[in-house]
Image (cartoon, rainbow, N blue to C red; front, side):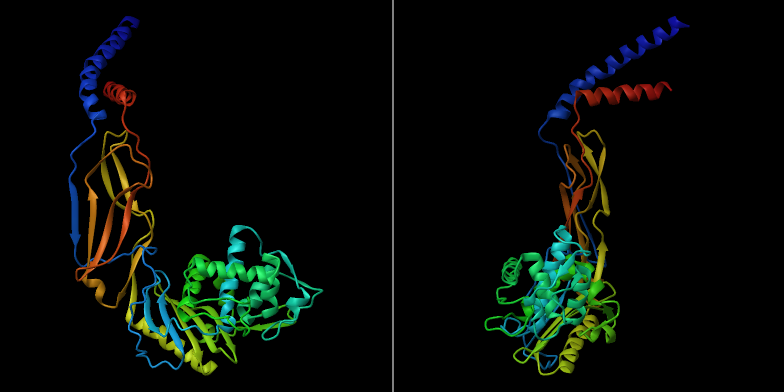
Length: 423
């Protein structure tokens, strides 16, 4: 019996050598050759839902500035939150007083501090004499009391509390002045070229100016990258201090407009009535900014007109999520025979209603790719066009590493293939 097993082993060894040696000669050219012919596979499909890389579009200001909605205000803009695309504009770069809409930038910096771990929602924030002395909208903080960051955010977002926003500014940056410098630095980073902040609350001050365009930019940054803020901006009524302080949202759209998610009101004698209003319906998120409206009622009417126009005219069509498999691609010279090509980003597109039936999708992806392949490596792209005009494109990438074949892996494959045959 032992002799028989020994003969079997000898047979396997010689058989492997007989197969492997010529394989080495063949694979030498296979493994180390520098070029290999691949064919490009272009597929065009009509009547396919279009997609766009949500991060590929910047705010587009090439919009007719004729105020065809007959808005009664000094400036207005409507943008799609995901892409930043401008859907309506009126005097969008006129520098005006923002009033408490200023607090959008203050809230943005607070949320960034939370996300970075610099502060936490349970931190107890003291109130300085400076913070307690703020006029305008406030909750009458006492220098002897503290509130948590969570409570401060609630008071700022719901009640537009000037005393609370100054207390938070001092807590984060050490002083209001240092915090205002952070605000201006962030404005520059976001491309807010019409903006100069002089304070963190929005009370009238010479040179404290911005535009509806810039307000849309910082509103989008806040909502897109810190969506948890809507836990505060969608509160209609609440209370602090064990029910002793009642809060009522200054943004009446939260109660009266379907899908409203925020964001911030503002009014002073110089600014008149301002509003950054956000809402989401059927996967479409919009931001409407109104500045210098003559009354509180009219600013809400103007914002409602803008949002209604957006939801009635446009729709958002989703194609897929980040990581969705587009196709399995064959791999040459790899330890694996194939790799999955996946979407690099979430993708969808903004379209006028009814246009989705005319969108063409083109997948540009090679049939075969040579190893080595790195996870996240671009393999191709999907592009989407409407009537010949490119709407957007999204990269298709490898979902895993695929190492290049070598002599050891070829021998290993050969060995296991023989073992499988003998079973």
